[in-house]
Image (tube, rainbow, N blue to C red; front, side, top):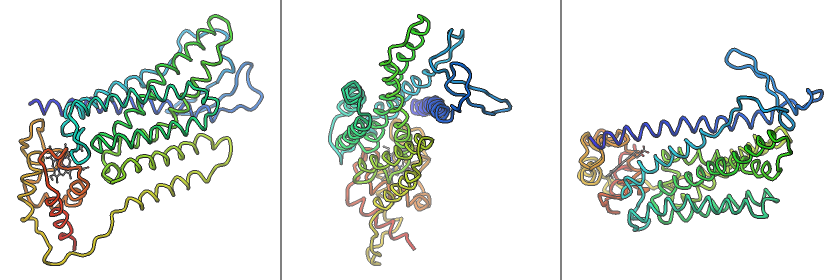
Length: 391
Ligand code: HEC
């Protein structure tokens, strides 16, 4: 009953997180696109910086961007902030439901480090707070005069964070916390810098004075960072489905490399209206292919007949180490149904999922948190079994 409700709660919160995240990033992509596509050619109406025509959903739209703002504030002015706040709140809730509530299994990997559940949760939450503080201080320092250097330093800081987290947390928890740290930076940017700078704009306008330019500059810098951080954060959100990423021995490096590819691709779309930089996209693609090759598992030599292991021979291992969760009726507290829909009560089901089983076991992702204490010898047996299945 409790596990059943937890599952639906998980679904509901994840669904909301996904919806508001799409709304946030969608709006941010849209305004970025708008800015880059404004028609700024003269003649423009008085006080107008640029305009744009668009057709969408059965109507024509004509948008204008003001040079300094309208003479008089409109009665209704739309702000874009709740998507950002809701994405962060739902993300944090999800982190609690999926990771902290089940910390022994989800946060800790005994083969990585032997910390207590409390420590793991404190490290998780601490990483979010520290990331924001470090990032914010970097942005407030004199480095903001050199945005490229600042950008590189922020990237380096996040890379170090990824490395450090993989030393203490389970691989998936480390990944998701880098993502959550980036998400925290992005949402805090909206809350502490971008929205206040827009408020100053509006206030100055209503008081008939020139807005303090430092607000605008800071707001722009943080929005730029948010723009570049979207691709890495989206990658991290989906990486959980791909054991070749978080399961790699150098998983932190994979995270950094894929993020760099994402940032480069984003950069291309940001600057292509300014100058030709067509090399960026193929370079990003090439980088991606390099990652695929670098993470390729070593080819193993064919098995001797005497080394072959049959499904019947590994069933006892599976029953002992996996079936408490992966069975039609799990006995592990907190599980109402077999996780990921995978039940191994039947040898056929095991064989049908041999690929996944082998990957998860050899990369030590499963058994989750090694709660059932699978030994290295047993993992070797699973690998032999997998290779025996190969035709
Ligand atoms: C303590 C519970 C638990 C145990 C024990 C456990 N698993 Fe899992 N397993 C999970 C959960 C939870 C998921 C879903 C993870 C997710 O998708 O976020 C999962 C997912 C999987 C997947 C799907 C992964 C994917 O990305 O599609 C495979 C394969 C798997 N487990 C194999 C095994 C094998 C093999 C064992 C035994 C050696 C095992 N598991 C033991 C909880 C467990």
